[in-house]
Length: 215
Image (cartoon, rainbow, N blue to C red):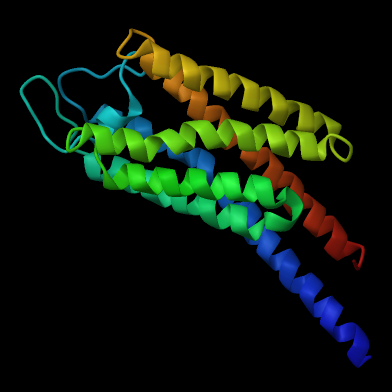
């Protein structure tokens, strides 16, 4: 009996960690709601198609534009970035080291973005945010490739999401302050939330099935 307790205990502990990681990923799509809540309070006009997400976090106000809920926006960058880091670490076993590392970098980039508002230091803000746009699409593509044999449908969805978000990130950079820059940015960010939440859901349901079967 003592010889089997260790592995069983490790399995239970690992299962709990994975469930918490899955829940972290499942909570992250609610980030989108914070954008709408913050945007609703702006004055001077804000467009989800032409204005960047970072404008919602601008601290300063002028007669032309003001985001009075900027603290909520910057806090959400940090909070949801922390969820990404935590979820990635807790799900490191099923995701593998490369995906875990890329998502940790992405989460830390999000946290740093919240600490460096756009209107306070544009260069620092760009440096903080850039890793997020690079690492997330790569992470989804690598994760999709990793799952192609075990979960082909999810793998295909993750691969497609990685390609689309990567192309959107590049389009966002190239568009500058164009009329569709905000749309490109959100296309680079929002689908990632859904893709990782879908992966988290499979881990949560798989964990429940394993528990019920006595694994």
